[in-house]
Image (cartoon, rainbow, N blue to C red; front, side, top):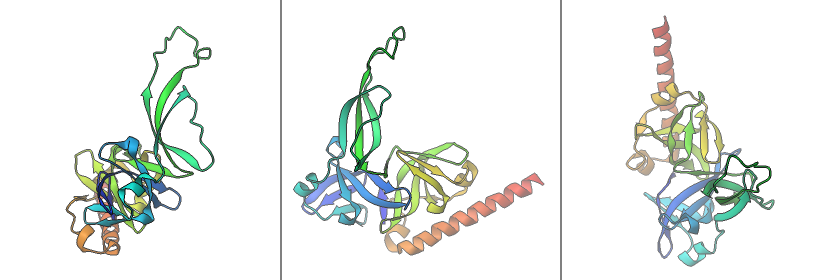
Length: 243
């Protein structure tokens, strides 16, 4: 199954909007929820359990009509908090992606310990101990170099198979899961360095025949074989160059 951020999402009674973000259980490496929203209206986003959704072609279909999707858990909230202090939620929820909406002017001549600065923060509320990934989420190699952003994921059911990265050259690279070190809020850290990442083959997630005409098992094996072959070939070439 291919989950592409920005993908069209349909309710049983017609188009609902788009796939805004994806919620992942980082230890199990599974997708637990999809965050769906009317086009570019994240403040109306809803949390959809993965078992309610299926991918057909380049669209996602949710097994609920539009009114029932709107009854699902709201995701996006706004709150004023003291500068530098965490957002307080109950034990069932964690803070996902956050954005500062309003930052007051802070005069450097005043003592920040005396003035109680308040900032307006927009944040997503997600299930406890899970992580949220959006299209702008950064992908970083093991040598701490940013190589692109997340375009989506390939999955086998709810199990992650690969991360599709929109690289700096505007091409797409499918990184097999064994090459992913950590999934964090708004960030993915790879277990390979920049050179190994650049050796991975480019792919087009919108027209790749493997995502539509081949089974996910075959796709996963091909990704693993490509990654292994290109990484080994690159290492051999570098070793020969050093001799």
